[in-house]
Length: 287
Image 1: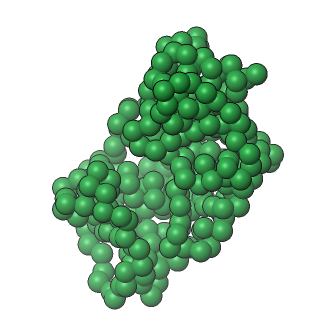
Image 2: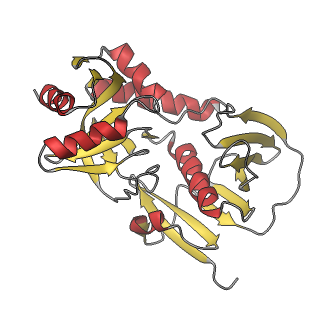
């Protein structure tokens, strides 16, 4: 159809293809790459999906400030329905095969940029779950050629802490402010920028060796300590894309988190939103 666009993208070292989009969201453009013979997944936008019986498998909690995702089982795979918020109209419906490699999506026309991005992010998480990569709910910066990831519950101050590093530690730059990719390469962890950066427009096709992970929590004073292995694993698990409905993906996800927890030093920073917290964190993780 006239006006439709198709491109291949490389994120975290993995290539995927999106075909028949009515437009290309701006955040995807920095990640364009030449087509590859065997992408990790292909998403095709179609005008209508065929009807077939489907049974509800999973629905996200009804958080009024988070997207709602419902997953249904079908004879040939899965059906996924997504809304930008629980009380908003349906943004898209997407069918996915059992291997999470081939997907078709129909758009509602109400939130198309959200639908395209959210569907690509879901498919990316699914298709790479057994390939040693995870999307982290984190803010990530680079300094001295090394990447640092800041984790924490929503509202903890991840973006603020990244900003404090940038303001107080020279030559620090933001990699991604919401969903960087963390990937194992041999016995090393690499952090990548991604097209999905929350409310901060930071879409950088870059990668750096990961130096440390820091979980943040608000406190009346600044204090930092290294987490033992079990707590490091739990911290990573709480801030990465999970796969409760799919055992085969969940097993790969847990294996990757175990290896990451054993590879990367993880810290807990109890902190104020001030320069002292950034400097204490920087000096400790590089000490």
